[in-house]
Length: 326
Length: 269
Image (cartoon, rainbow over all chains, first blue to last red; front, side, top):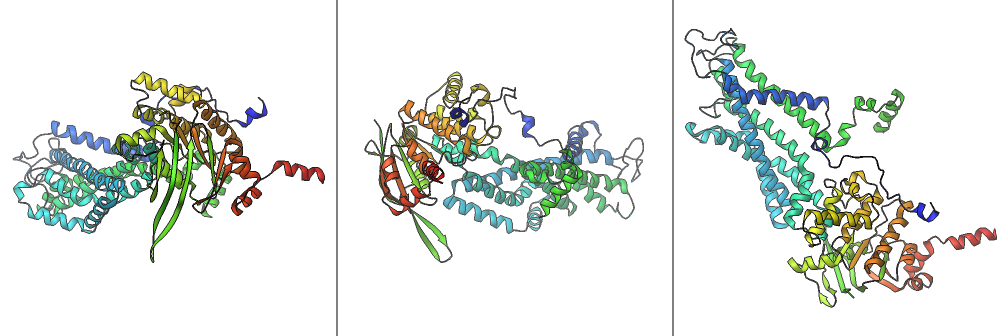
């Protein structure tokens, strides 16, 4: 190589074979213990919600011989005061709660995307209006409003989807604000200007250039909305304002409370639904944490356990820690 | 021959402050002409309005007053006319780490302008076009590079991709906004030589925005010196460097390192 060429960049690529396209696996969060545990718990519960109702008996069927008995061979988790099978009720209740969770997740993600992303990208008066509306919805206290709306709707019209819509309408505003902030930062990046210079149409810039960079944030918000919805629905049902004539985990708890299961020590009636809610909420939170780690790689590298994996000596790890403290 | 004329253009920004609005005159009655086949350098310090001129030329901003003309015709700002303009005038951005979308592959970045400007229609044509562009900017083997994402490339390779993207619509004019300032010093010359070579091959008119007088003199026919939103000096490159008239140009020329003078000083000592 002459000196003139050596100044030139080594433009020729290394010839080592590389994956031709980025596979979907690379887009997913790296397989951390958090993610594996979260996905397994959530997976089991979701699977149960889908196939459970198909294999258990009628949750409303009343046993003529067993009232409020703990688990036996015929009734795995025992029976309620009126002799209904708790195991069957949980299967239907989990399905109901998950339907609400997913519906709220989808509706509120769509709402927050419309008000957050669209407003921030188009800007001007539309952005001002959307931001104002988002802020108004944000300061309205959520649960009291849900209670008022839930109270206002006649009991016989209170189905699962109506409850889902009520919860979604009160729960999207926080995500919309976050999405607006992220979109405002992304739309000013050079690559957006570069695609305008290329002659790209506005909607295409939004959908093809900006949106993919928001997907991790939106995934995290979807999961968060699900947790919010399942807990919110349980709260509403516990107050007797939940979905009528369908089972959710909240309505089971409401029934148990009303029929004095707590004072009579019928733990097999109220512990299992409570446990399913707690486990599912925990699993979704774990998934959410691992999504956060992709959005913010600093979180990923901040634990000592991970640094040890880099193959550093304990002294080097200590030094890194000290540098971070400074 | 195509000409791109900047006629008496002024750009004023309004800055919202605590005590009412302030005005910032970023570009103040600037006029110049770019011709195909010629390279013009726009030199000035940070904040002198260089990048604003690039944004105005690329229609990312609208001038407060004045006109931009292509072959004597005022440019169109919407629809088909705008696309026609973007087909003729393209830009290489300053920061190759910001100007490529981290989500998309190199092939996407090059295929889009080819499709938008009708340079390719079928999938095979697009693939061929992408390969040809990558070969022009010496990113070989092209097929391998096309499948990569920006984070797999070095700064210099990214800037080559950005140059290839700008060339995709087969423009007549190229605006290069400090194309090498974010790159490692050792690879700057490679990228600049590539730009000069492409300029000759396509008979491009190039506006080279920089604050580096030495490369401006080496690569450009004409130099415009900008200071606080105005063009304070203009002329053939050697003339401006060797006989600077304006105070700012003198300081700029004096600040630039002069290897020959330094060598003489060393030999004397």
